[in-house]
Image 1 (cartoon, helix red, strand yellow):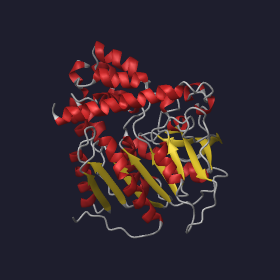
Image 2 (tube, rainbow, N blue to C red; image 1 turned 45 degrees about the vertical axis):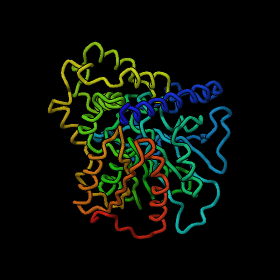
Image 3 (cartoon, rainbow, N blue to C red; image 1 turned 60 degrees about the horizontal axis):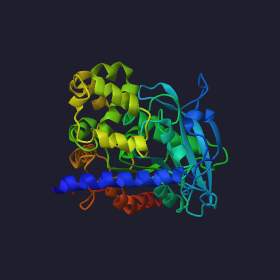
Image 4 (spheres, rainbow, N blue to C red; image 1 turned 135 degrees about the vertical axis):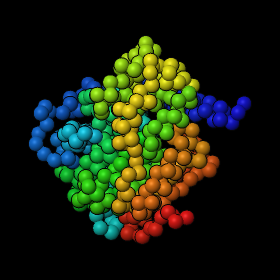
Length: 413
């Protein structure tokens, strides 16, 4: 059996195993909080109250737990769920939900307690996938990474991004929206009463979809949120160029992710009119998949049933070949602006989902524009292992930035 096929099968097996664990955990979740779609907290007032991006619309006490069965609170932290103002990719005011987690032990380091605006990876398209919810019921696959940051005494703010938790379709992989949500999440954490984070130095961290969000936050910060004291950004496994990513995913085991991105772009840019390109199979897939989470029975089923299919199997004509779709994808391609904050960009050499080449192109584009980029590849990793293997380097990078240590990057290497 070819190595690439074995690798794909192993990842699919891991997904199924994760699903089984989730189902077992859910059996003990009868008294969990209602999902966002059934929780009025996530429904914003209409019209939105006057204010500016990052203003907190409402907040409430919440829970951060690693325990999906008994919901035992993670010790030594205070958690809030928040609803805050942000902007869509087109600049329209929107409400976005998220979570803020702050250690209760006083910060003893230099200066103010650091704040990480944490951008999560792919969750799905349904409101129940929102990380502010999954973190509160012990069913978040990045919870251990977040706990590691909290254990350093840092505060962590996690955005749900546009349309994930709040009403409306999630604008999955629309970088211009995701970057704003990440920066405004940091602002909201700083403005949250009782969190004690006003003026906190900020770091941004994200991998996979979160890498897109982090990369866009890095590019947008100087113009969109210049008041933030942004010390450093970790943007890992970055889908920087979705046209290149789509070409790689077409016919792969993970083409479902490309379909999700198509739904996200259609939500952000309704004039793209995804529906007019779909055949009967495409319409059925859209109807069944637009509210799923990846880590669910329906989510894994969708990944398995669409594996190795192609765009042509679900469309009458390929929208990615039209100028309208290409223009919107290109408008959300990273690399046109140099981040001012230092960036650590890790990527797995054998990433079977997010091609290494397009991430390397991003790092070179940033370097050519004078950015301070530390680029590192992991030769024994695919996409998921890339996140795990880059974890120590990512935390060390942010730790050094908060300590005020200089970094020169390796653009000249």
